[in-house]
Amino acid sequence: MIDALEQADAAVAACFDTAAWASEPDLVAALDAAHRLEQRLAAVKLSLVRELDGRGTATAQGASSTAVWLRDRLRLGVGVARRLVELAATLDAAPPGVREALAGGVVDVEQVRVIAETVETVHASAGAEAADKAVGVLVDWATQFDAALLRKLGTRILDHVAPDVADAAAEAALRAQESRAARDRHITISEQTDGRLRLAGILDTEAAAALRAAIDPLTTPTGPDDTRTPGQRRHDALVDVCRLALRSGELPENGGDLAQVVVTTDYDGLTRQLGTGALDIGPHLTPEAVRRLACDASILPAVLGGTGQPLDVGRQRRLISGPLRRALVLRDRGCAFPGCDRPPRWCDGHHIRHWADGGTTCLANAVLLCGHHHRHLHHSDWVVQLGGDGHPEFVPPAWLDPEQVPRRNHYHPRR
Image: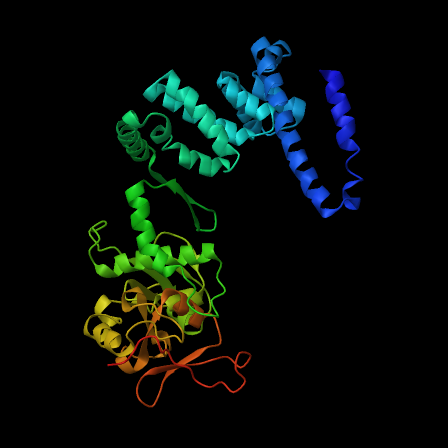
């Protein structure tokens, strides 16, 4: 075997310098041949790993396991090495037709894993004869579809090889899937050193559907000036959903208080946009962030004097809420920023002249903005004002429009 592998190694090495001179059809044919050879070598490699594992070579050489030995021998990550050992065992236990398909370069190692697992399920559900039929069907499909699609098609393999038990098996598989989803569901929240949170987890099917229904409408770009990445848009959509829940007033009490966010800052720092503010859970915010959050009716700004004495603790009715918010919704109909179609329920009330600068909480000093455009307005050179008819208009920065012609939102028709 070693002589044959050395000859193959030399032949492959000789191919490196010839590819640039080949015609396009020859390049395509060479790619197909290289892929086929890669799969055949994978079959050889897995058979070698399985044999070495069976002989106990790793432990004989002082390693704790074959995976650890492979990690050091082949300089692999331990996860990759473990997967190699597992796949070798899977291939060893697979029907002969599967091993032959890999050795012949017809399928790849990921397809082998899918085929082997699917055939095992068929064997348990419908017996050996149906499992043998499944091998042929799956290998044929593997010549047309990748591993992910092959796995999806494999969920209905019984329709092809054992239709008399397919419905019952599908129902049993669905129940098992639901049970597994319920068991595995979780959310992990890890606090970072700078106050940010890392979210990770798995949602069950119903929770996933609810999350998508809630955030998908909010993840589309809000206009041509929306430069956020898809990940940033999903982040902002999740924040908007949380804000909507806070605004609803229907969340359970926490420590005797309604769910709310409290931001503490000193008055001079807020009015002069210097210093920082602190969230009630610890992390600090820039003055710009505090001023933006103070626009939101679900945020309570606690303003302190120089001695730390509370000068003013904002109340819900003091901010843009109740009848004032209803009047604002009737006027703006949704986010007022040009080109945005966000509805009122996703919007904050923004003070045109900030309350910390002496702005009053009234309809003539308020505008509805979605979460994205609220942040954008606080951190850009756009200016909002009320036009002569009492409706909001936005003056773009000079770099965007040298004439700085005011713009309006035309997505929300007026009554």
